[in-house]
Length: 203
Image (cartoon, rainbow, N blue to C red; front, side, top):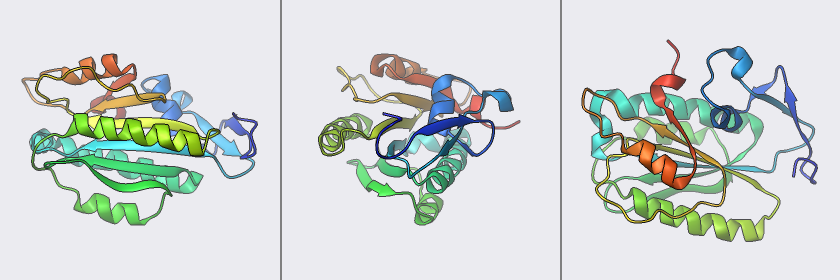
């Protein structure tokens, strides 16, 4: 895949940070843990970002800090000319913000206005994302897809989760003295990496 028509991706000591690859490799504790990349041509990469913005994410600045992390991710996607798919889970039904478009500075305006509220249609969002990725893979079989799921995991009981056809990372934004810890269960069932947001923030 790295040698396809979109050009080879190079590991590098400098350049742009490959955030999906860095997060999937584990908690970055120092600069040496960051993965950098250079490309000889435009990337053929899609980052699917699912954001849980339900009412529970208001607690302890969870969504606020998540927005800071997402702002960095969007900036990196813009510089790397990656394509983004963005799906929010809040209110009665999940909503697509963009679907496979090149990252643009306009996403910052959407992010600034993002607020928490309503229910948690996260399971519906995962089902939609799974169908969408399957259809997109048929159209672009060489595309490298990555998933980033941001959630506090505060769901009621759920049945079997849809298997998403790409590697991914769940960023747990649950905070407070009493934690349900359901995001770890979600990540295990989805077979994606698990990280808590406090591990990814500076300080």
